[in-house]
Length: 373
Image (cartoon, rainbow, N blue to C red; front, top):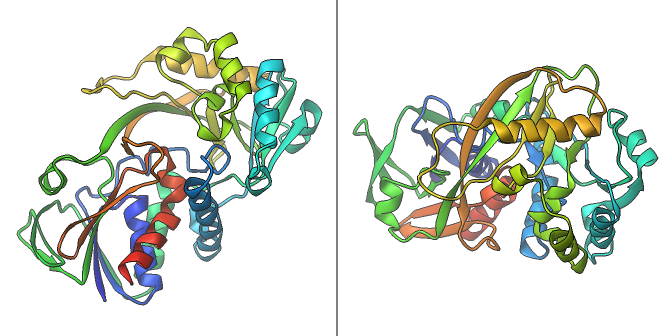
């Protein structure tokens, strides 16, 4: 079988991986010289802890298994089974964390409510003030800016993979066939459009009423911390944005403890991961209204800096990079991904939202299974 994958981000690359692993030939087409979208601009978190139960959690847990397996084959991914800690500071936040540990699927997520002293044994860099923390053993991390590069190196070694950058696919010309902006037609037994947040052009022509929206976020990265941050770190505002934490305790938190004005205005939470060079990737904000602003705002970064410093009990290293990114999210946020046959032999796979990096291996596996690869 010959598979054409359109899109060089993590979702597209994982589709290419699935096809090659199953013995097929793959041509992957990317409109940029290298993918530049959300796949590179995220935390690299394999984030099981906050996922909704049912299909979403099952997908995340399966993806976590696949990430670990692929990471063993491709060490350059930088896969690390580091888990996550969410420090809590008062009784209301503690109650939300405690309710999470009482979920029927808490064991599958690796939830445990630990004391501040126990949290510091897990992550000694957390020297600031907090009362306890929610530990999630199943969370992990990879290096987002280099993951696709190393995956492609491994794919090339198969002898059944071709990467074609700098080509934008403009037209479906027939069953399993597309034409790019160089005029070349690429034919296969299946075409997968994994175009991320690029929802215009060909995608709009094929699906005018696509139930997917774009979301913008801001993030930053620091100079090396100078010591290991042994887990991912979130703050209690993350409870407000992830479905796993829905409970009467969360309702009480939302009613009785408002977010800081800046955090509320930008729909913010703290997520933080240490990169392999020692720097910290920190975010994030959420913007849903179009058109998106073209600039980045300083207030969210100042808020995040204060929160991080309060957990670390020390000044944040110098901020070296700030950036914004856009990802595609199903308008029905309970859906893991939008997967649709849009032409004969052509399927569109998009809209995983913030689940994209986490769930991409399992999303691609499901596509491969459904298409009979």
